[in-house]
Image (cartoon, rainbow, N blue to C red; front, side, top):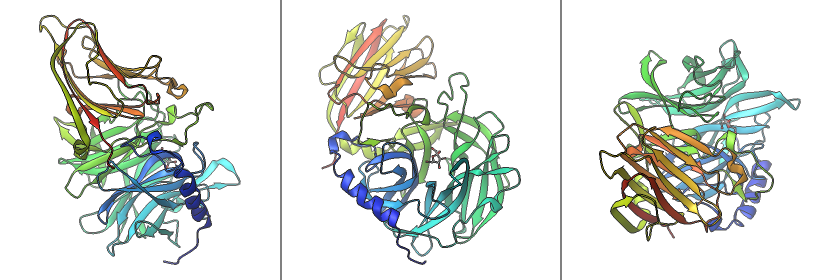
Amino acid sequence: MKKTVNHSLLFARAYEQAEGGKIPRESRPVFHLTPLTGWMNDPNGFCYYHGQYHLFYQYNPYDTEWDAMHWGHAVSHDLLHWTYLPAALAPDAPYDSFGCFSGSAAELPDGRHLLMYTGVRQEGGDKSREFQTQCIAVGDGTDYQKYEKNPVLDSNALPEGLSPYDFRDPKIWRTENGAYRCVVGARREDKRGVLLQYESRDGFEWRYVGVLAENDGRFGLMWECPDFFPLDGKHVLFVSPQDMLPEDFEYHNGNGTVCLTGRMDGDRFVEENNQAIDYGIDFYAPQTILTPDGRRVMIGWMQNWDTCKTTGYEERPWFGQMSLPRELFFRNGRLYQQPVRELAQYRSGKVEYRDVLLDGEKSLEGIEGRVVELDIHLRCADPDTPYQKFIMKFAQNEKYHSVLSYRPYESWLQIDRKFSGSRRAYIHQRRCLVSDQRGEIRLHVILDRFSMEVFINDGEQVMTATILTGSDARKISFEADGQVMMDVTKYSLIEKE
Ligand code: FRU
């Protein structure tokens, strides 16, 4: 491949190196990746390549707002501690001058690393005419060259009636016979999302296979960031639909995440089941990989387009975080999630209480902190007298707190960050309908410096939210209306030196 000097990329690399170093480690989360500097959205190119995990991300190094997208880059051995590498892509070719949008990665037979991304160009500065095409860059895990024949998929590769302005987010995978396939999001004139499948022998020349799946109107409009993979004998399709409307307790995020499971009819996916991937406030555009030891691991943007409006007064040197990587599996036909098992090696200072009777407010010695893991098991103190309410306040100081509350009568769990002290948290509450177990519930809570992730009943459901309260707010307290019996185990989570 011809080597070209990419000035925008060199400039971005110099800039991020100078600016990223100025951000103190304590002002970033411990286990959640943030941009080296500036803004981050979707995870891109998540993969295991040449002995380590690579994670790229939608990136504007120059500001904490979304703008001309680059690809930031980090690597890790444990999926939890990330080392920044120089930015991988900058928007500097005629076909991607408006941005290098989301995409994915695969290894070529000769060992080179292939990135497939959406190149966006704007015609005459007109926002409604942003042409989106699929492009390729090839590299060694650090430096990438854009393919001279880019784009590899443009409007000619679109079936009739599909918009060239919404054609993005290729997710590539290797097939059993060594070829490549990818799924790309597209949109019909009626604005509904369609997922298109393409095939390639070598990763460079692509041919249209057909529609993989399409939105029949139940799940929002455009479908962004698809991912398609086998898991536990099922065909699984993840999509992030825009403009979703709530259905009962599901899909309250506007920009949501959906897990579809189904069967294949030739090259077409036929949906049999659906569920939300996350029931919290901040989760979008997840991407999965298969780890070398055979786990399907997902990482998502721990933010949401509806909740990332800037307010002007809250200055932060970075914006946007990734979720914890989560292991996925199916149990009783449902998608379950658990934080990657690598996290267990960073536990320290175990504090454990058994059979604590809660019938008012209580703090427990040693149960506090902002980078902690809590395992909570609740049940009725007296099986014949159900309780009305359980509350856990956390990230708490004299002024601020956030709340996790459970109402067994109504079977919902709620997170509320209204009093977390951040203007950005104006969308502050979500409820999740949990399966009713007569007041018994298990909550596995991971707090990092600026977030909470709650894995409910062994990961049957997950609620994720960013919490921007200052790190001095460390108190955790419990409260009950009625009598609750609680077991709680707490670990501090320790950063690797
Ligand atoms: C999803 C998304 C993608 C797009 C990218 C642009 O969050 O809108 O569809 O490729 O972000 O940054």
